[in-house]
Amino acid sequence: MSGQVTFRIWRGEKGAGELRDYTTEISSGMVVLDVVHKIQATQANDLACRWNCKAGKCGSCSAEINGMPRLMCMTRMSDLPLDKPITIEPVRAFPHLRDLVTDVSWNYEVKKKIRKYQPRKPDNPDGTWSMEQDDIDRVQEFRKCIECYLCQDVCHVLREHSLHSKFIGPRFLVYSAALEMHPADTANRLPELKDDFGIGYCNITKCCTKVCPESIAITDNAIIPLKERVVDRYYDPLKRIFRAITGSGGD
Amino acid sequence: MLTIHVPVTRNGFGRTSRPDAWWVVPFLTFLGLGAFVVYVTWAAFQGDHYRFGPYLSPLYSPEIFGDPKTAWFGGRPSWIPSFLPFTPALFVLWAPGGFRFSCYYYRGAYYKAFWADPPSCSVGEPRKSYRGEASFPLILQNIHRYFLVVALIFLPILWRDVWEGFWFDTGFGVRAGSLILLANTILLTGYSLGCHTFRHQIGGILDQLSRRPIRKQGYRMASCFNRAHMQWAWASLFSVAFSDLYVRLCSMHIWTDWRIF
Image (cartoon, rainbow over all chains, first blue to last red; front, side):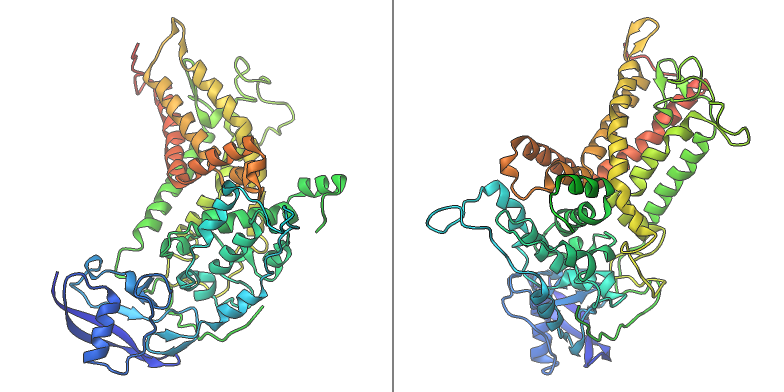
């Protein structure tokens, strides 16, 4: 695979700007980030673009490639239709800084708000815990997350409706699920998930699952199980009666 | 929660940078679900041709009230006002209908296909306001677990219908209708046992599954079905409608029920 290809890249600052065309030669094996770097080196030295590992593990080079949130370093040119210009835009769910770079610091602040891991008392005299691999398998899937925030970007609650003040987004529902389902954790995050973190805003479109570069089943394995736990606690009248009779925890 | 200012570049309904045919899947979903609802509503109000030989249409099972010779509790109950329509299907369809309507997979599918919320991933929406499932009316979707209980009660009844579908006047036999009812019930079982709520209740609710070996096996089974929940959902949707159509057309002598042995 080689030949000329046209990239249509968003150029501008703080949300204002335009799409500009850059035509360049590509060769076999290139990914989108390679082409962006080539354009940066030869045609647009001032093109701002965040990247780091080029291996799909740092989550820095998130962008919208032909309208879909993807990692530039993991998107092969051979997987894209080259007969039309390829559009590269910054992620839309966060404040735009310059060109392909956005300010994702909102995510760091949200993460601080989530109740931390609170382990039960150690199981063993030496202060360690014993856990079965079967019990930890489920949360290990969530630990694959590289915090690229593609799921946050594609989530229409943040992207389209800007409900950043009411909804923490798929990434932090996965983070909450990893803590909430941990076999040694004792903290209860359900009140925040229902009220402050807005899990009810998710309407299960599964777009977050589709764009996850780590193939985490975000909706099926993290969000829906958390929704079910919230229903258990707040919306199931029979479970409420059962808890009242048995005294097994309040709200 | 934290507030940030994100100048939303709202492009309007259907606007996107995606060059692919993103509208195909929601459009097919709209057609598929729409056709099913129209057919089932029509079939439910017919009130006849729902039995053929040993076969009973799944839309009419269990026949709680209906034909006095075959229904559990006889004919039309006297407490139903005469001006209301009556068919056996109207007594049962609320349960599987509610189960599917509140199903997590279908919710995501019809929010996109019928309500464009969103039309597809990273495609512009028609409305600015959004309440999701956090408030009325969609908060009522949380009733799904109760519909699940009813659906699980229906399953053994449908399996009994399958068993009866192999017994003819001449004794045990296998005909096309027997296999259609069997396939339909297998698909309905796979769909029900892969339900996200079932998966949660049987084991997902526990953080230390290893201490409950039976529930752990149940969770593994439910997870196995759940991985293809969408496929089970669509296959069982079509099989229910086709099973009713098959029984109906055989009963009307339009189709012949092929005898295999």
